[in-house]
Image 1: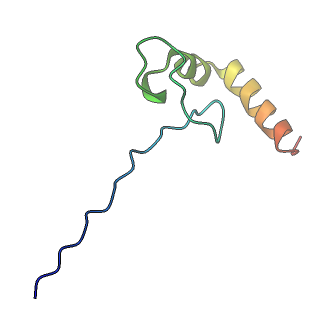
Image 2: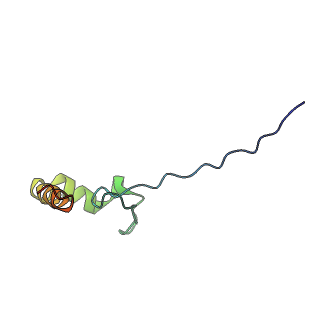
Length: 65
């Protein structure tokens, strides 16, 4: 006897915004396919001062400040 199983639905993973943890990438910039080519993410992660400010805000939001 042969059984046929229905194929499981695969969900496409939703990229997460590294600047807004827990939130999906909303593709808020023109011609962006995700966080990997987002100019805002590139600027923040490539600038030491902006990255330090972002980290300080994340710590404050978590109550670790």
